[in-house]
Image 1 (cartoon, rainbow, N blue to C red):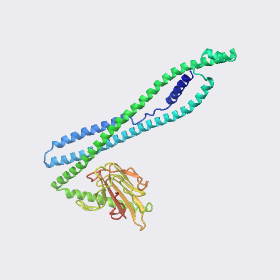
Image 2: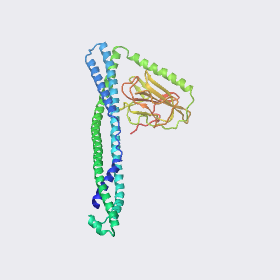
Image 3: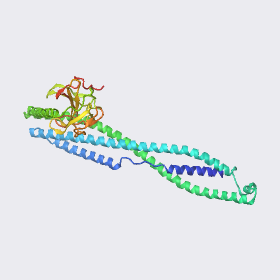
Image 4: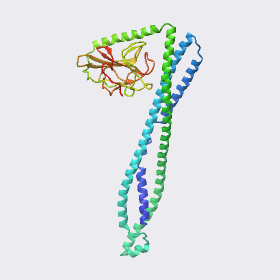
Length: 406
Protein backbone atom coordinates (compact mmCIF):
# COMPACT_ATOMS: atom_id res chain seq x y z
CA UNK A 1 0.00 0.00 0.00
CA UNK A 2 2.90 2.33 0.77
CA UNK A 3 4.09 2.22 -2.86
CA UNK A 4 0.55 2.72 -4.14
CA UNK A 5 0.00 5.72 -1.92
CA UNK A 6 3.34 7.25 -2.88
CA UNK A 7 2.73 6.73 -6.58
CA UNK A 8 -0.76 8.30 -6.51
CA UNK A 9 0.29 11.16 -4.24
CA UNK A 10 3.19 11.87 -6.57
CA UNK A 11 1.03 11.83 -9.69
CA UNK A 12 -1.70 13.99 -8.18
CA UNK A 13 0.72 16.49 -6.67
CA UNK A 14 2.51 16.92 -9.98
CA UNK A 15 -0.83 17.18 -11.74
CA UNK A 16 -2.06 19.91 -9.40
CA UNK A 17 1.13 21.86 -9.87
CA UNK A 18 0.98 21.57 -13.65
CA UNK A 19 -2.67 22.59 -13.75
CA UNK A 20 -1.70 25.79 -11.98
CA UNK A 21 0.68 26.74 -14.79
CA UNK A 22 -0.81 29.38 -17.12
CA UNK A 23 -0.94 28.64 -20.83
CA UNK A 24 0.00 31.87 -22.62
CA UNK A 25 -1.84 31.86 -25.94
CA UNK A 26 -2.32 35.58 -26.56
CA UNK A 27 -0.73 36.57 -29.86
CA UNK A 28 -1.41 38.61 -32.93
CA UNK A 29 -5.04 37.92 -33.72
CA UNK A 30 -5.91 35.88 -36.78
CA UNK A 31 -8.31 38.66 -37.69
CA UNK A 32 -5.52 41.25 -38.05
CA UNK A 33 -3.45 38.91 -40.25
CA UNK A 34 -6.54 38.09 -42.32
CA UNK A 35 -7.22 41.80 -42.77
CA UNK A 36 -3.72 42.26 -44.14
CA UNK A 37 -4.22 39.32 -46.48
CA UNK A 38 -7.49 40.86 -47.73
CA UNK A 39 -5.81 44.23 -48.22
CA UNK A 40 -3.08 42.62 -50.28
CA UNK A 41 -5.61 40.69 -52.37
CA UNK A 42 -7.52 43.91 -53.12
CA UNK A 43 -4.31 45.65 -54.19
CA UNK A 44 -3.49 42.79 -56.51
CA UNK A 45 -6.94 43.04 -58.11
CA UNK A 46 -6.41 46.78 -58.55
CA UNK A 47 -3.04 46.08 -60.19
CA UNK A 48 -4.70 43.71 -62.68
CA UNK A 49 -7.20 46.43 -63.61
CA UNK A 50 -4.41 48.96 -64.15
CA UNK A 51 -2.49 46.51 -66.32
CA UNK A 52 -5.64 45.79 -68.33
CA UNK A 53 -6.02 49.50 -69.02
CA UNK A 54 -2.36 49.74 -70.04
CA UNK A 55 -2.76 46.84 -72.47
CA UNK A 56 -5.64 48.59 -74.23
CA UNK A 57 -3.68 51.76 -75.10
CA UNK A 58 -2.41 52.77 -78.52
CA UNK A 59 0.52 54.93 -79.68
CA UNK A 60 -1.02 58.39 -79.84
CA UNK A 61 0.27 61.24 -77.68
CA UNK A 62 -2.95 61.09 -75.70
CA UNK A 63 -2.56 57.37 -75.15
CA UNK A 64 1.07 57.83 -74.17
CA UNK A 65 0.04 60.40 -71.58
CA UNK A 66 -2.54 57.97 -70.21
CA UNK A 67 0.10 55.24 -70.24
CA UNK A 68 2.50 57.33 -68.18
CA UNK A 69 -0.25 58.14 -65.71
CA UNK A 70 -1.23 54.49 -65.47
CA UNK A 71 2.39 53.45 -64.99
CA UNK A 72 2.68 55.78 -62.03
CA UNK A 73 -0.58 54.38 -60.68
CA UNK A 74 0.99 50.97 -61.03
CA UNK A 75 4.08 52.19 -59.17
CA UNK A 76 1.89 53.52 -56.36
CA UNK A 77 -0.10 50.28 -56.22
CA UNK A 78 3.07 48.18 -56.06
CA UNK A 79 4.50 50.37 -53.30
CA UNK A 80 1.29 49.82 -51.32
CA UNK A 81 1.56 46.08 -51.93
CA UNK A 82 5.09 46.15 -50.55
CA UNK A 83 3.84 48.00 -47.48
CA UNK A 84 1.13 45.35 -47.07
CA UNK A 85 3.67 42.53 -47.45
CA UNK A 86 5.92 44.14 -44.84
CA UNK A 87 3.02 44.62 -42.42
CA UNK A 88 1.91 41.02 -42.86
CA UNK A 89 5.47 39.75 -42.39
CA UNK A 90 5.86 41.86 -39.25
CA UNK A 91 2.54 40.58 -37.86
CA UNK A 92 3.47 36.95 -38.46
CA UNK A 93 6.97 37.53 -37.07
CA UNK A 94 5.36 38.87 -33.90
CA UNK A 95 2.95 35.93 -33.76
CA UNK A 96 5.78 33.39 -34.09
CA UNK A 97 7.90 35.17 -31.48
CA UNK A 98 5.02 35.24 -29.00
CA UNK A 99 4.16 31.58 -29.59
CA UNK A 100 7.79 30.56 -29.16
CA UNK A 101 8.09 32.62 -25.99
CA UNK A 102 4.90 31.12 -24.58
CA UNK A 103 6.00 27.56 -25.26
CA UNK A 104 9.48 28.18 -23.85
CA UNK A 105 8.02 29.82 -20.76
CA UNK A 106 5.66 26.90 -20.20
CA UNK A 107 8.51 24.38 -20.51
CA UNK A 108 10.64 26.41 -18.12
CA UNK A 109 7.82 26.57 -15.56
CA UNK A 110 7.22 22.82 -15.87
CA UNK A 111 10.91 22.13 -15.24
CA UNK A 112 10.85 24.39 -12.18
CA UNK A 113 7.73 22.64 -10.85
CA UNK A 114 9.25 19.20 -11.44
CA UNK A 115 12.32 20.23 -9.46
CA UNK A 116 10.01 21.42 -6.68
CA UNK A 117 8.15 18.08 -6.90
CA UNK A 118 11.39 16.16 -6.25
CA UNK A 119 11.82 18.19 -3.09
CA UNK A 120 8.21 17.60 -2.03
CA UNK A 121 8.40 13.85 -2.79
CA UNK A 122 11.45 13.47 -0.57
CA UNK A 123 9.47 14.93 2.30
CA UNK A 124 6.38 12.80 1.48
CA UNK A 125 8.39 9.59 1.50
CA UNK A 126 9.72 10.35 4.94
CA UNK A 127 6.21 11.09 6.23
CA UNK A 128 4.68 7.88 4.77
CA UNK A 129 7.60 5.81 6.02
CA UNK A 130 6.83 7.04 9.51
CA UNK A 131 3.33 5.50 9.27
CA UNK A 132 4.32 2.05 8.03
CA UNK A 133 7.47 0.07 7.31
CA UNK A 134 5.81 -2.88 5.48
CA UNK A 135 4.63 -3.40 1.91
CA UNK A 136 1.35 -5.06 3.01
CA UNK A 137 -0.39 -3.99 6.19
CA UNK A 138 -3.32 -6.35 6.93
CA UNK A 139 -5.71 -6.11 9.86
CA UNK A 140 -4.10 -9.25 11.35
CA UNK A 141 -0.64 -7.71 11.10
CA UNK A 142 -2.02 -4.55 12.64
CA UNK A 143 -3.55 -6.51 15.55
CA UNK A 144 -0.34 -8.45 16.17
CA UNK A 145 1.74 -5.27 16.18
CA UNK A 146 -0.43 -3.38 18.68
CA UNK A 147 0.14 -3.36 22.39
CA UNK A 148 -3.54 -2.98 23.32
CA UNK A 149 -7.02 -2.86 21.76
CA UNK A 150 -7.22 0.93 21.94
CA UNK A 151 -3.98 1.20 19.99
CA UNK A 152 -5.40 -1.23 17.43
CA UNK A 153 -8.55 0.86 16.92
CA UNK A 154 -6.51 4.01 16.46
CA UNK A 155 -4.24 2.45 13.85
CA UNK A 156 -7.20 0.81 12.07
CA UNK A 157 -8.92 4.19 11.78
CA UNK A 158 -5.72 5.67 10.26
CA UNK A 159 -5.54 2.85 7.68
CA UNK A 160 -9.23 3.29 6.85
CA UNK A 161 -8.65 7.02 6.26
CA UNK A 162 -5.68 6.26 4.04
CA UNK A 163 -7.80 3.80 2.01
CA UNK A 164 -10.60 6.34 1.51
CA UNK A 165 -8.08 9.03 0.64
CA UNK A 166 -6.48 6.61 -1.84
CA UNK A 167 -9.79 6.31 -3.77
CA UNK A 168 -10.33 10.07 -3.71
CA UNK A 169 -6.81 10.62 -5.02
CA UNK A 170 -7.39 8.15 -7.87
CA UNK A 171 -10.56 9.98 -8.92
CA UNK A 172 -8.87 13.35 -8.67
CA UNK A 173 -5.81 12.06 -10.55
CA UNK A 174 -7.99 10.91 -13.46
CA UNK A 175 -9.70 14.30 -13.70
CA UNK A 176 -6.41 16.18 -13.51
CA UNK A 177 -4.83 13.84 -16.07
CA UNK A 178 -7.55 14.82 -18.55
CA UNK A 179 -6.90 18.49 -17.88
CA UNK A 180 -3.18 18.01 -18.50
CA UNK A 181 -3.91 16.35 -21.83
CA UNK A 182 -6.14 19.27 -22.83
CA UNK A 183 -3.33 21.70 -22.08
CA UNK A 184 -0.77 19.53 -23.88
CA UNK A 185 -3.04 19.45 -26.91
CA UNK A 186 -3.29 23.26 -26.78
CA UNK A 187 0.49 23.55 -26.74
CA UNK A 188 0.82 21.13 -29.67
CA UNK A 189 -1.78 23.11 -31.61
CA UNK A 190 0.13 26.31 -30.95
CA UNK A 191 3.32 24.65 -32.16
CA UNK A 192 1.56 23.50 -35.33
CA UNK A 193 0.18 26.99 -35.96
CA UNK A 194 3.65 28.43 -35.42
CA UNK A 195 5.15 26.03 -37.98
CA UNK A 196 2.43 26.93 -40.48
CA UNK A 197 3.10 30.62 -39.86
CA UNK A 198 6.81 30.08 -40.48
CA UNK A 199 6.06 28.43 -43.82
CA UNK A 200 3.77 31.30 -44.80
CA UNK A 201 6.45 33.77 -43.72
CA UNK A 202 9.03 32.25 -46.05
CA UNK A 203 6.56 32.42 -48.95
CA UNK A 204 5.76 36.06 -48.18
CA UNK A 205 9.44 36.98 -48.05
CA UNK A 206 9.99 35.35 -51.43
CA UNK A 207 7.01 37.22 -52.88
CA UNK A 208 8.29 40.48 -51.39
CA UNK A 209 11.67 40.05 -53.08
CA UNK A 210 9.90 39.55 -56.42
CA UNK A 211 7.80 42.66 -55.85
CA UNK A 212 10.91 44.71 -55.15
CA UNK A 213 12.49 43.46 -58.38
CA UNK A 214 9.35 44.37 -60.32
CA UNK A 215 9.14 47.79 -58.67
CA UNK A 216 12.76 48.62 -59.46
CA UNK A 217 12.17 47.89 -63.16
CA UNK A 218 8.86 49.73 -63.14
CA UNK A 219 10.51 52.88 -61.77
CA UNK A 220 12.86 52.92 -64.75
CA UNK A 221 10.11 52.15 -67.28
CA UNK A 222 7.84 54.91 -65.99
CA UNK A 223 10.68 57.47 -65.91
CA UNK A 224 11.80 56.65 -69.45
CA UNK A 225 8.23 56.78 -70.77
CA UNK A 226 7.64 60.14 -69.13
CA UNK A 227 10.91 61.61 -70.43
CA UNK A 228 10.09 60.43 -73.95
CA UNK A 229 6.60 61.90 -73.78
CA UNK A 230 7.84 65.22 -72.38
CA UNK A 231 10.36 65.57 -75.17
CA UNK A 232 7.68 64.81 -77.75
CA UNK A 233 5.53 67.51 -76.20
CA UNK A 234 8.43 69.97 -76.01
CA UNK A 235 7.79 70.29 -72.28
CA UNK A 236 10.89 68.57 -70.86
CA UNK A 237 12.77 71.82 -70.36
CA UNK A 238 9.66 73.45 -68.93
CA UNK A 239 9.39 70.76 -66.27
CA UNK A 240 13.05 71.13 -65.34
CA UNK A 241 12.46 74.84 -64.98
CA UNK A 242 9.49 74.18 -62.70
CA UNK A 243 11.61 71.93 -60.52
CA UNK A 244 14.39 74.49 -60.35
CA UNK A 245 11.95 77.31 -59.54
CA UNK A 246 10.44 75.21 -56.77
CA UNK A 247 13.86 74.50 -55.25
CA UNK A 248 14.92 78.17 -55.54
CA UNK A 249 11.77 79.24 -53.73
CA UNK A 250 12.44 76.70 -51.00
CA UNK A 251 16.03 77.97 -50.66
CA UNK A 252 14.74 81.48 -50.05
CA UNK A 253 12.31 80.18 -47.43
CA UNK A 254 15.10 78.25 -45.71
CA UNK A 255 17.40 81.29 -45.76
CA UNK A 256 14.70 83.40 -44.12
CA UNK A 257 14.08 80.63 -41.59
CA UNK A 258 17.76 80.37 -40.64
CA UNK A 259 18.15 84.16 -40.44
CA UNK A 260 15.24 84.31 -38.04
CA UNK A 261 16.32 81.37 -35.90
CA UNK A 262 19.51 81.32 -33.80
CA UNK A 263 21.67 78.16 -34.00
CA UNK A 264 20.27 75.45 -31.77
CA UNK A 265 23.57 74.18 -30.40
CA UNK A 266 27.17 73.42 -31.30
CA UNK A 267 27.85 70.90 -34.07
CA UNK A 268 29.53 67.85 -32.60
CA UNK A 269 31.79 67.25 -35.58
CA UNK A 270 30.46 63.80 -36.44
CA UNK A 271 27.69 62.51 -38.68
CA UNK A 272 26.20 59.03 -38.93
CA UNK A 273 25.07 57.40 -42.17
CA UNK A 274 21.42 58.50 -42.43
CA UNK A 275 20.03 55.24 -43.88
CA UNK A 276 21.35 52.42 -41.65
CA UNK A 277 20.02 49.56 -43.80
CA UNK A 278 20.75 51.07 -47.23
CA UNK A 279 24.44 51.48 -48.01
CA UNK A 280 24.55 52.33 -51.70
CA UNK A 281 24.72 55.73 -53.42
CA UNK A 282 22.51 55.69 -56.51
CA UNK A 283 23.41 59.26 -57.53
CA UNK A 284 26.29 61.29 -56.19
CA UNK A 285 26.91 64.98 -55.72
CA UNK A 286 27.68 66.70 -59.02
CA UNK A 287 26.58 67.14 -62.61
CA UNK A 288 24.01 64.82 -64.15
CA UNK A 289 21.66 64.93 -67.15
CA UNK A 290 18.95 66.88 -65.38
CA UNK A 291 21.34 69.45 -63.92
CA UNK A 292 23.74 69.81 -61.03
CA UNK A 293 22.83 67.52 -58.16
CA UNK A 294 23.66 69.15 -54.83
CA UNK A 295 23.08 66.10 -52.65
CA UNK A 296 23.59 62.36 -52.58
CA UNK A 297 20.82 59.87 -53.32
CA UNK A 298 20.84 56.67 -51.28
CA UNK A 299 19.03 53.62 -52.71
CA UNK A 300 19.53 49.92 -53.38
CA UNK A 301 16.34 48.62 -55.03
CA UNK A 302 15.00 47.54 -51.64
CA UNK A 303 14.98 51.01 -50.04
CA UNK A 304 11.22 51.64 -49.93
CA UNK A 305 10.10 51.91 -46.31
CA UNK A 306 13.58 51.58 -44.82
CA UNK A 307 14.37 53.82 -41.81
CA UNK A 308 16.00 57.24 -41.96
CA UNK A 309 17.83 58.51 -38.88
CA UNK A 310 19.18 61.92 -37.94
CA UNK A 311 22.74 62.17 -39.25
CA UNK A 312 23.78 64.20 -36.19
CA UNK A 313 22.21 65.54 -33.04
CA UNK A 314 20.28 68.78 -33.34
CA UNK A 315 16.88 70.42 -33.52
CA UNK A 316 14.26 69.92 -36.24
CA UNK A 317 13.61 73.28 -37.89
CA UNK A 318 11.36 72.36 -40.82
CA UNK A 319 8.88 69.61 -41.63
CA UNK A 320 6.87 69.65 -44.85
CA UNK A 321 4.53 67.31 -46.68
CA UNK A 322 4.39 66.90 -50.46
CA UNK A 323 6.65 69.69 -51.65
CA UNK A 324 6.61 69.83 -55.47
CA UNK A 325 10.25 68.82 -55.75
CA UNK A 326 11.29 67.34 -52.38
CA UNK A 327 8.06 65.56 -51.52
CA UNK A 328 7.87 64.79 -47.81
CA UNK A 329 11.00 66.18 -46.15
CA UNK A 330 12.50 67.66 -43.00
CA UNK A 331 15.54 69.69 -41.96
CA UNK A 332 17.71 69.51 -38.84
CA UNK A 333 19.83 72.33 -37.45
CA UNK A 334 23.06 70.99 -35.91
CA UNK A 335 24.39 74.35 -34.76
CA UNK A 336 27.77 76.02 -35.42
CA UNK A 337 30.95 74.09 -36.09
CA UNK A 338 34.38 75.05 -34.78
CA UNK A 339 34.74 77.66 -37.54
CA UNK A 340 31.38 79.25 -36.82
CA UNK A 341 29.69 77.67 -39.86
CA UNK A 342 26.06 76.69 -39.37
CA UNK A 343 25.46 73.04 -40.30
CA UNK A 344 22.03 71.89 -41.45
CA UNK A 345 20.93 68.57 -43.02
CA UNK A 346 17.91 67.91 -45.24
CA UNK A 347 16.18 64.57 -45.89
CA UNK A 348 13.79 64.40 -48.86
CA UNK A 349 11.31 62.11 -50.71
CA UNK A 350 10.16 60.33 -47.53
CA UNK A 351 7.39 57.76 -47.89
CA UNK A 352 5.16 59.55 -45.38
CA UNK A 353 5.15 62.83 -43.51
CA UNK A 354 8.29 62.88 -41.30
CA UNK A 355 7.76 61.37 -37.87
CA UNK A 356 9.37 64.34 -36.07
CA UNK A 357 8.07 67.82 -35.30
CA UNK A 358 9.55 71.31 -35.50
CA UNK A 359 11.44 72.12 -32.32
CA UNK A 360 12.08 68.47 -31.45
CA UNK A 361 15.61 67.56 -30.36
CA UNK A 362 16.99 64.49 -32.15
CA UNK A 363 19.99 62.30 -31.42
CA UNK A 364 22.45 61.50 -34.19
CA UNK A 365 22.34 57.91 -35.41
CA UNK A 366 19.48 57.01 -33.06
CA UNK A 367 16.35 59.10 -33.67
CA UNK A 368 14.30 57.81 -36.60
CA UNK A 369 12.85 60.75 -38.51
CA UNK A 370 10.96 58.87 -41.23
CA UNK A 371 11.24 56.16 -43.88
CA UNK A 372 12.57 56.17 -47.43
CA UNK A 373 9.98 56.87 -50.11
CA UNK A 374 9.31 58.10 -53.63
CA UNK A 375 7.46 61.40 -53.14
CA UNK A 376 7.92 64.68 -55.00
CA UNK A 377 10.11 64.73 -58.13
CA UNK A 378 11.43 61.23 -57.60
CA UNK A 379 11.66 58.25 -59.95
CA UNK A 380 12.36 55.49 -57.49
CA UNK A 381 12.45 55.05 -53.73
CA UNK A 382 15.55 56.77 -52.35
CA UNK A 383 16.78 59.19 -49.70
CA UNK A 384 17.89 62.57 -51.02
CA UNK A 385 20.40 63.74 -48.39
CA UNK A 386 21.81 67.25 -48.25
CA UNK A 387 24.37 68.91 -46.00
CA UNK A 388 24.26 72.71 -45.95
CA UNK A 389 26.96 75.07 -44.70
CA UNK A 390 25.41 78.47 -44.02
CA UNK A 391 22.59 77.31 -46.32
CA UNK A 392 24.97 76.44 -49.18
CA UNK A 393 24.63 72.81 -50.26
CA UNK A 394 27.97 70.98 -50.20
CA UNK A 395 29.15 67.46 -51.02
CA UNK A 396 28.38 65.34 -47.93
CA UNK A 397 31.09 62.82 -48.83
CA UNK A 398 33.65 65.12 -50.45
CA UNK A 399 33.55 67.41 -47.43
CA UNK A 400 33.96 64.47 -45.06
CA UNK A 401 30.62 64.68 -43.30
CA UNK A 402 29.61 61.08 -44.00
CA UNK A 403 31.38 57.95 -45.12
CA UNK A 404 29.67 55.26 -47.21
CA UNK A 405 29.41 52.14 -45.00
CA UNK A 406 31.34 49.10 -46.17
